[in-house]
Image (cartoon, rainbow, N blue to C red; front, side, top):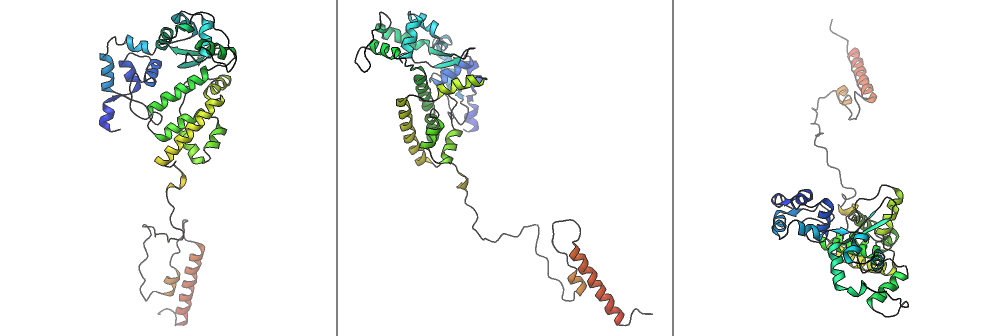
Length: 337
């Protein structure tokens, strides 16, 4: 992104302030596509174009209409909104007809699911048969109405809320990203490490996927028990769901490999083996000595070394050279008198 493009966009905090949205509302608005953003879904912070902010501010009913589109409710408020009992609301949600958009852990580490109020109103108006009357049970595998199927799933103890939330979250992240390795990392984030290693045996590819792994549920709890509860919600556990994500990851990895290879240490080619090392620029070759250099001077030439002072071998050579010159002078008649 160029400097000019950055100057024409707003950071998330500033955009939320101008749109009069709280932090959670703004994050949900961007995930649902109500606020269009630019930038990488995983590799960088999302920004909002100035024109997008102005468009939303000029929309009818701003800011209440925008805030209502991202308003979330829990079980009690959702049941009241749909004019049904909380028990019936829970059965419909567990059967998969009401898809949560978020969750959090309360003080007792129980999972509290949140739903979009806008979607609950649309469901209530479109499926009145699921809101009134007794939901009859049908044998497993039998055919029946939507109400019968819902009751069958709820009666069997199946809870579709975690699976539906994971599928929704992954779908929203995939919608934001165009990078093929990011998309593979998004799908692989719900598979446990053993299955990921089975599908991606290359350690460098797995490292790339882990580096791009999205945070599906920001704001993890501080306690170890709470983190374990959240981790179970983040990991696919239904056989059909696991099979679906494994197939999706295999296809996305094939696309990613065709696009580019995962980074690895041997991306830079090493120097050829046995190539002569160039001489360091700070140590030029010494100039040739004159032909008349004495024996003592030749033997007293310094020996390159890394320490400080002259090495012992050099000092011994100098001393021997001086001794030989003194002996030659004494044999030649000594000093002038």
